[in-house]
Image (cartoon, rainbow, N blue to C red):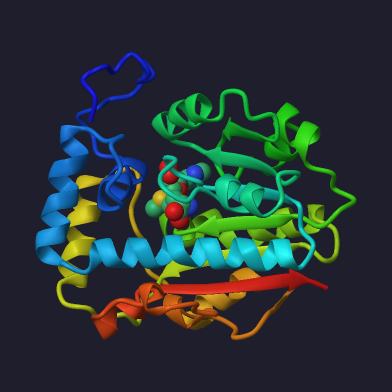
Length: 272
Ligand SMILES: C[S@@+](CC[C@H](N)C(=O)[O-])C[C@H]1O[C@@H](n2cnc3c(N)ncnc32)[C@H](O)[C@@H]1O
């Protein structure tokens, strides 16, 4: 990455890896520090397919976003949006229709600082620093009030986010708070690391990640547990599936390693 770190928020401890920056590294991004790269590389050694799993998730993001645009959605809330990388939500939907509006939300100060820089001059996209549990402050924020009309359908994205949320945070009820604020016809796109997935090295990779990332433990969930996040939504075809099985468009949406294709559960639901 560039040696110019003037954009790095002062409160960031660059010696502690963060999920946003480790994931950025796996995707080939440049907004990560030595501590992130060391952990990311260690996990690549344990689980060589991890980069492919991250890439599959990004390609699901693209297909789900375009599906929502085709379904008439023009406003999006992306919670746990991460560090901007190739193929961000606003780029995808604004290429399809420049009128689309996007609010990004993340708790990571580096993700937010870099998003702010990238979005300078884009009046239809903004970013907000918040924890996903701060549902009131997200919906009452200046950013959401300005760009999201809650009388019109919203595309809510929560990709590779909820496995950082322990059960004692009551994620099903947190998601219900989002759902209850969204009008009918809104969509939820969600991906989540699957407890059933057994690619080589995944158990060791999760243990290593959790040992180095005390503040952001990963909690894997099985299909039934992930399905509960769609309470109040009707899953669109093909339902909750391994990432590439969600409306694939080409061989680039698949991993050559079959077990990697099962790593993230992916689905889109519509609020009826
Ligand atoms: C693996 S990245 C996923 C980024 C993007 N959604 C994607 O799928 O490409 C997970 C993101 O969730 C964010 N995150 C984790 N816990 C969060 C929380 N409690 N509230 C808001 N964001 C959170 C992290 O900072 C990170 O940017």
